[in-house]
Every structure is written in C-alpha cells, then in structure tokens.
Image (cartoon, rainbow, N blue to C red; front, side, top):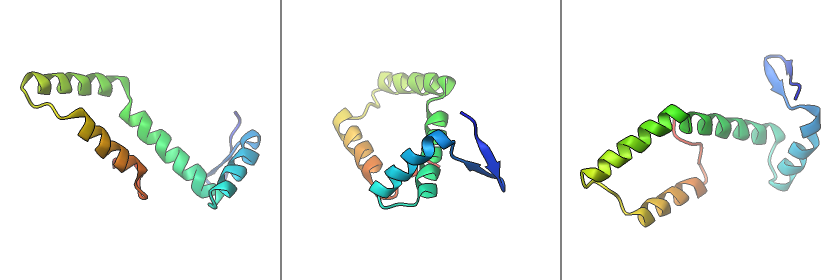
Length: 93
C-alpha cells in the first residue's frame, strides 16, 4: 500500500481511511488515536516476537523449569489477561 507523508506524519492509505474512521466512530475515539494505538501495538508485538528473542525466551523458560522454578499456568494466564484487558495497556516499555 502506498503511504503519503505530510509534515513528517504518516497518512493512512486511502483504501483504509473509511475503515479506520468507522472503527474510530464505533469506539468514540479520534481516528489518529486509533491509528497511533495500532502502530504502537504492531511495534510492541514485532519486538516481542522476534524469532531470535523468542528462541532465547523459550530456552530461558525451559532452563527455569529444569531448575524447579516453574509458575502455575492458570495464575500466569489470569495475570496476563488482566493486564491486557486493563484500561492503560500500552505493552511493555
């Protein structure tokens, strides 16, 4: 998709503008706020799920389990869901 730049600000491609405006209206939010949040989440997920980082985290988790430092899966998932559902979720810094 083609992106335009205006005053150092990325503009949403024309094919997505109506969808962004409709989603923003549904949520009673400004379109630029919605786009900003989407970009922040994308960048956070991109950092979090980098293949080399994921492999390192898996290896660390397995080593932690071997050392008997495992966590209860249900409580971890409950904490993660509560964090993701929280009003100020912006992802890790």
